[in-house]
Length: 172
Image 1 (cartoon, rainbow, N blue to C red):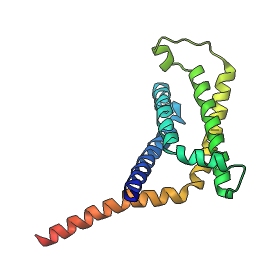
Image 2 (image 1 turned 90 degrees about the vertical axis):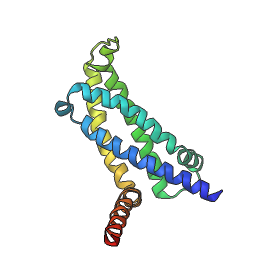
Image 3 (image 1 turned 135 degrees about the vertical axis):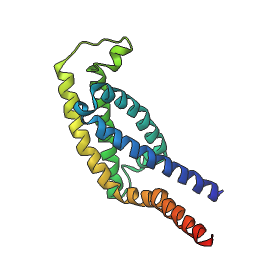
């Protein structure tokens, strides 16, 4: 049973790692809509909603555990991480709502026309800039996990692949 649990955790970790890498790259692309174009900016941002939902579901056990212990005994790093995650969630929600409200491509293509509002654009720009700062803090806080996961699930398999190939070539 423990082996099954370890396999599930490893699959979740790999999934979360790849998902986080994809979301990080997508976030960087969407942060400069002038370079990528407004259509890519909007569609990629909408796709990130689904990716972030999966990220939250993969972290759901941790979210529930820390939510239950938040007012009790909890380490400082977990408490900071929890608060930072809530700030990211709130800010991400503001980015998405304001982005939808100022959509120039995606929503009109779906036949939805919303009135333009200067306040929505300001809120979108401000929350995106705050999101960049929060994402930097989130990344810094999880740097150890990132390095460990990349080493375990990306670097080591590549090294093993090449070392196995060299052994095979030497045997020939």
